[in-house]
Image (tube, rainbow, N blue to C red; front, side, top):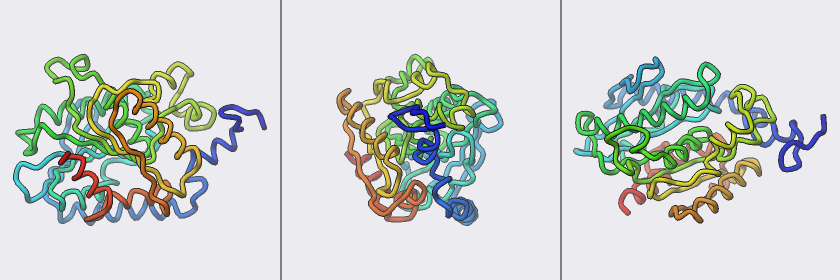
Length: 288
C-alpha cells in the first residue's frame, strides 16, 4: 500500500524512519556488545542488584555506587520500544558515571505487550518515587536526582518530567528531578500507530496523544539536554527538535545537540565510557 499515513509517509517509509534495527545490519552485534560490556562491568562494580521498587517481578533496579561519599544519583532508563531489553543489558552505562562520582540506578520495568504502555509509564514513576523516598537508606543524595534515557527511555524521561508528583503519590514534593538527558527520543507516538510497533503497544489515537510528551506540559523545573546522532533518521532528529522548541516555549531550560558521526545505537557511546561527552555534561547540569 502506498497510502500516506503520517507526514505524507507510507507505512514502509515510516518503518524506515522509525525502525533503526531494520536499516542497521550491525544492530545485533551492537546489542551483544552491550550485554558483554555490562557483564564485565557488573563483575567488578560496587553494586546492589535487583532492588525491588514495586510488586511486579520486573520492577527492580540495579544500583552502582562510586567511591565518593554522599553521591548524587543518576537514573538510566533503557530503550527497546517499550518491548525489549532489560536492566542487565545496560549496566555498562554506569561505568563512566560512577567514575565521575555518581551513584547510578539502572531501571528495570515491565514491558509491552505483557502490560499496556500506561503501566510502563506508571512503573518508572513508581521507581523514581521509591528512589527519592529511600535515598538516605540507599546511600545517595535526595536533592539532586538526574535522569537519562535512550529512545523509548527518553520518552519515559519526558513523561517523568511531566509528572505532577504530589498528585501521583501523597507526600512527594512538587519536583524530585534536578535535570534530564534524553537521547534519541520519541516524543510523539502517532507515527508508531501506523507500523508494527504501534500494534504491539495497542495504541489508539487517544492513547497515542495522551502519552506523547510533545502534547504535555513540563511539571519539572529541571534543565534538559536533548541529544541525537547525526546519522539517525530524519524523523528521530525532527522529533527531538520540535519537542525541544515546544517545551522551551513552556519554560523548560534545554539544549538540543547532535553527535555528528553517531547513529541511533552508537550514540549511547557518548554516555557510557569514562570522560565521555555526556558524562561531562551530566556533571555540568548537576553543578548548575
